[in-house]
Amino acid sequence: MKSENESLIAATASAAQPIETDAVIVGAGPVGLFQVFELGLLEIKAHVVDSLPEVGGQCTELYPDKPIYDIPAIPVCSGKELTDALLNQIKPFGATFHLGQEVSVVQKQDDGRFLVGTSKGTIFLTKVVIVAGGVGSFQPRTLKVEGIDRFAGTQLHYRVKDPVQFAGKRLVIAGGGDSALDWALNFVGKADSVVLVHRRDGFRAAPASVAKMKAHCEQHQMQLLLGQVSGFEDADGQMTEVRVTSPDGLTRRVPLDYLLVFFGLSPRLGPIAEWGLDLERRQVRVDTEKFETNVPGIFAVGDINSYPGKKKLILSGFHEAALAAFGATRYVFPDRKIHLQYTTTSPKLHKILGVESPVFD
Image (cartoon, rainbow, N blue to C red; front, side):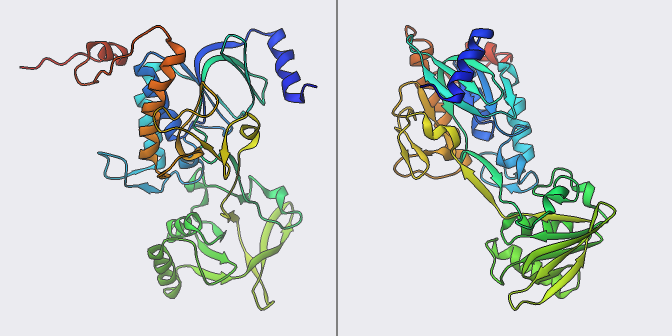
């Protein structure tokens, strides 16, 4: 019996022509974006699907302004700056992005290609699938207070898209990890007030950030409350204050304009777990020659994969994307012998990239 998703694919495929492409990349984070570049150098056309509404993955969704120091040749950049640079780098290849939708079904066809369907009914017929989905699709862990969800997106936020929105406002920030501390420190001196709420006097953030936060508290530039948000008050459709209950049962009332909650992510593999891939602790096993999975034609790069010595670093994902691209040529161009070329000296790559070949003395 066909599943609901499989039936949807069959109905959609019969009603509309699938999008035919060389590759479908699942995930538009930094590694997924660089995968477009590496495929493009080998003349492999790609479509990119991501469950988030914009490109950049966790870098732009959760930490757009957080500095990154370990990208080769770039001493420091923010997550947003890295994403923007990668988007500029892949412009010559004209990749098509399908955002706000999740790849729900992957089916191997008789001719060796894959029929790929998304949660919005988009259908692809592709020669290879490259999973660059980070930890899988994810959602921020939400605040469990009855009735508070109605303020989500207005006064209750699980991410910061526009920091200017919170300038001069009374902020309550809940959480004890890097993102909570980073944003609390960022808004000191910019917001009217900053109150950090954490359930205990122990933090998962960088020690330097914790020390800086405590110094601000000693100087009365912000406030730390130990406890949990347990309730709220509202008037005329606006949340006016939250109740914070401490470990000893004392409840304080804290006036606010905005409540920012950073409890971390709740990752899930979602439909990826149903594709027949060899999984290990919710990660996809791959070889280290091509970063191919146990299913021929499906590759996995970035934080989603697992192999001996794996390090979850963006730069490691870039290396994996390069080798996966060469591995994909076996399926995209089965009769073509692929030679390694260098972007510095190859006229062919210069033409692909739309740049002039340099003249050397």
